[in-house]
Length: 259
Picture 1 (spheres, rainbow, N blue to C red):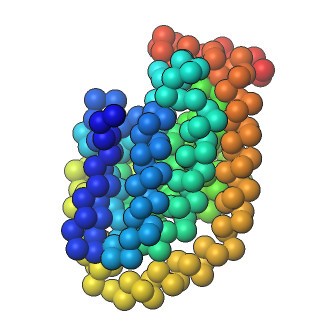
Picture 2: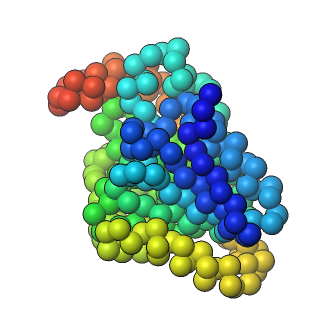
């Protein structure tokens, strides 16, 4: 199995690059497991203090690979991927490193969950950021409910999830979904500059603050990923999900019936 994610470690800085540009870095089950494994390894690497996440090509990540969902026994087997996504969310939240997402193009669905799980989110003005699971009759996963609520509060999280609304970088920054909106083509430079500022700061003190602020959230996140796994399993066998995926593949408007 070829690697779909590149990891580069330079001194105290690690860069994780989603490297499936031909699918806009849409994640299938193999890629989700690979990412969870990578984050687990980095979490335990005490010589790395900052981790940058970015996508190759035109997007950060278009989310889960919808076409792969058509095959019930393929690389999107729900039981397996929910285990990996739960592991990923908990590792992202509890890792001692300061994490930075460099977002350009789409950060949609699971791609959005991963981006907003980072401590710092930098997005280009024309980015398309959306928690758009609703379009295929699913609920957010990868801790998406938790990270969205942490950033924008419960009431707004519900509206964003239910509408699947697509936000550009500026709009996302205005509601606190991302931390900084920059000109198109500048996210990666800005993220690298931010990484250097952090590396020149007392990173041990920063990591300690992160641990203190996140301590109470870990039990809640554990509950959220468990509930997401149960809900996703139920939604995957729903009529609306099958219709949503079919409509996506056929490039038409779905006809949902609430079942």
